[in-house]
Length: 293
Image 1 (tube, rainbow, N blue to C red):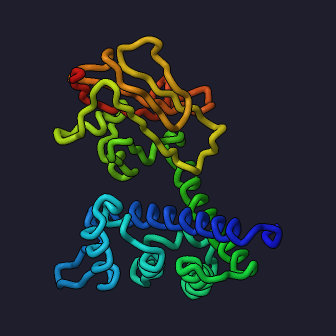
Image 2: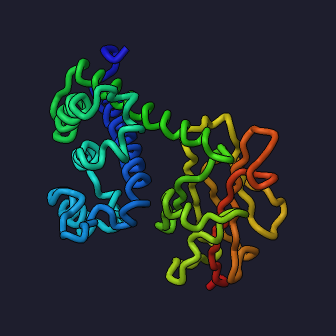
Image 3: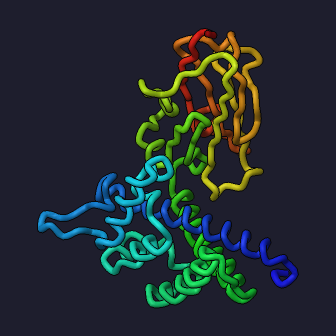
């Protein structure tokens, strides 16, 4: 199958797969280390002054964030694939924080993991510099990357089964104004009813009639898309339900003017019970819409 693809198609497929792998690795690192080492875990050092991460990782993150702060809003976003591998296979961290999530892909342990990651990283470097990769190298990128992703997904499924409520939840939300919230930030404000206002910051860009606003959510991918529905609602307006998709779009008009322009996003599983009665997760997004000029 791969041999029948054009070279550009093959390269695009490999790049997309590697990007997906990077997202899953960063998510795993962030979730596993944040609780024990705090939000600044990449720069953490113990009472003796010993850093948790090696210098190249720490300094690379600082450099990338200072150069492109919008591209890298969090430290973990500035972690490259090589950095992720370094963190994951750190002998101090692997056994306690990452082994359970990666054991399906690396049953023998970190020695096996190093070999497999090398088979992904070497052709990845070729792709990054516009060099040729063979069909065999593409096969290795695709197969090994998906093995690792499936291992992490399986880990999250196991954790989910152990939860009181194993239901689809929102792990990322972003809008066309440049706002973005990630899983850890969303979870920090999650309460026993739903999630309080998101994007309700004093310096949030304001809207006016004629502006276009789009919002997109990402759902925990351990759930298949046919296992839930996503619905958007503008509070206080009829019809109450607007769009059924992970991306919401609206053109602001005079009816939206006010201090509180509230948009709700509901995620509802196909089960006959729900975490919050009628739905399983919810975001409440608050914007200010100024009068027309």
